[in-house]
Image (cartoon, rainbow, N blue to C red; front, side, top):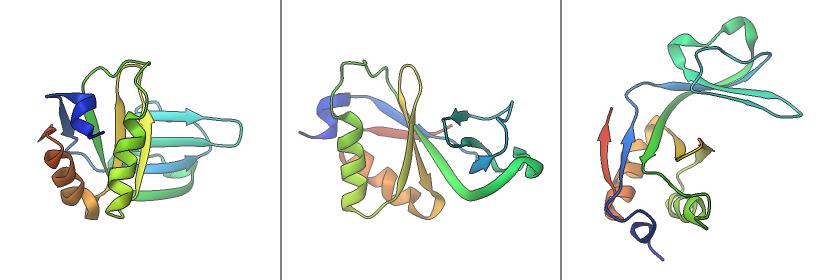
Length: 128
């Protein structure tokens, strides 16, 4: 099943900002995402805003792609299709979800190819 069967005429947008993915000692109040699990704290934050004192490790140069669609909880396989499509072209990604939609982090050097793949699936992509 093609990605367009999940999204129809949906859109996605790529954030203008560059992000860092940080293994941190504490959550960041201005982060796009703070993921706190039983082993570590991961912070996704604009590169210019991360707190160096809290950093254990950092990976820089990420861009965020957000699907501009409400993806119901009952949707099965959407992220698997997206991840598979990128894996087939050897584009590494990180993924996280909000209540209504999904976000994909792509390294800057893979961004244009990732956007091209989405457009090939009928997803209109813009920068915001």
